[in-house]
Image 1 (tube, rainbow, N blue to C red):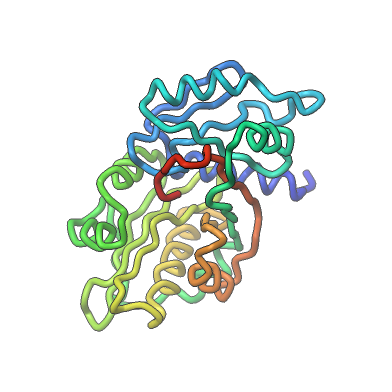
Image 2: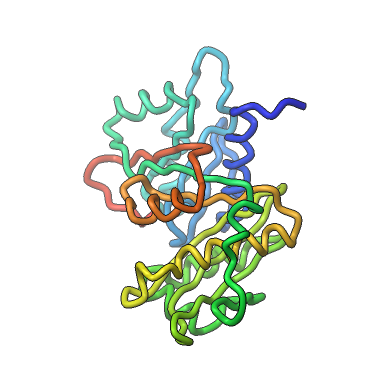
Length: 254
C-alpha cells in the first residue's frame, strides 16, 4: 500500500486521540463530543464524526453546543485539515481561532540515537510524586495526570535529571506504531541545557524497543521554543489543527 500524506495525517490524528484520551466520547448526530473533566482542550473539544460529508455539509452546530454545555464545558471545536466548511460556519457564528497546533513527527529510530546512557533518565510505569511536582510547576495538574492514567496499551512516564537532581518529565503512549510524547516539562532553572532533547530521545528509544515506527508530538505554533527543540531533533510537520471558541469565553490550555 502506498503511504500518502492523507494516510499519515489521519494516523497522527488517531494516535493523538488514543494517547491522550477524553474521559468520555459521545456521538451526537454527526459530532464527536468529548468530556474533558479539566484535562485541557484536546480532550474537551467537539469534532466532526465524518470529515468527508458530501458537499461540505456541516451537522447541526446547536446540537454539539448543547451537549457540551450539558457537560459543563464551554463550547469548543477542533478543526482539522480539510474541514474548511466547518471552520467557515463557526466563524460566521462568532467563534474565534485559538491555539493553532502542529503535530510534528519523525522516525523513532532517528531520534533514538541521541538517547543518553546512564542515570540521566528513568523509565517509570506510573507517575512518581517528583514527576507530579515538576508537572505542577509547569501548570500540568491532577486532571492531566488523570488523562495519562486513562491510556491503554504501551505507555511510559520518564524522569530526567540534571547534575543528579530531578529536573524534567515527559509522558508517552503508543497507538498503531506511533509513540506520542505529551507533557514535556523541564524546570525553569534546568532549561537550555539539553534535558528536553534527552527526554525526547529517551521517548524515542522506548518507542523503538516497543515496536514503534514513528515519534510524534503536538505543540502550539506559538510555543516557538518547543518548536525549535523538535526541529533540531529532526521532527517535521505531519498534521495540523486548531480550535474555535466564542469570543469572550475563556478556556484551558491545549
